[in-house]
Image 1 (cartoon, one colour):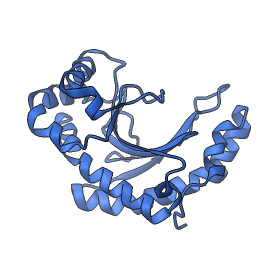
Image 2: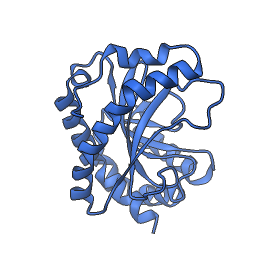
Image 3: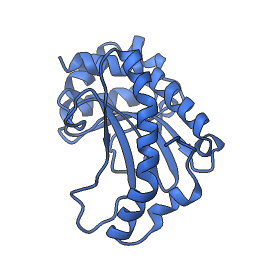
Length: 211
């Protein structure tokens, strides 16, 4: 399937009440689009990073009552999973699409990454564009823009990431559902490519921290 962009109908899936009806719509409507994005992005990641990448589409399998507020596809260098590793992800919430590099709670190397970035903050942090956002919890919609955080703010985020088991670090872009880029398949794929390229210095640091 060619990715043709996201529509209002896709974002409105997150307004469907009830776990099963929403999951059914996610599987039928959004998952094929995420799989199409995933396949399109693999050559870019593999050529740029020089390692094989594997696609992991969120299944939300542990949910028994509450319907998911977001869904995503992740790419990692591990065939069996992605949560324990730094990974790239693209997904949707009701209000926006997101394109991120993520180290979530289960990520084994997040403390080492935090220490490494704190040491190299002056060199690495300026490579991240000012409009990119940082999230400390992938389950919540709240983010802060890089230029809003400032150096003191990112130091606080990284110090917490190093010490707190539940702490997370996600960095990337949010695109409002009304943004024309979101509705245009090729424009969105270009945005994915550009975002991943700009996140490469952070990814390389995360990858090194895992070894």
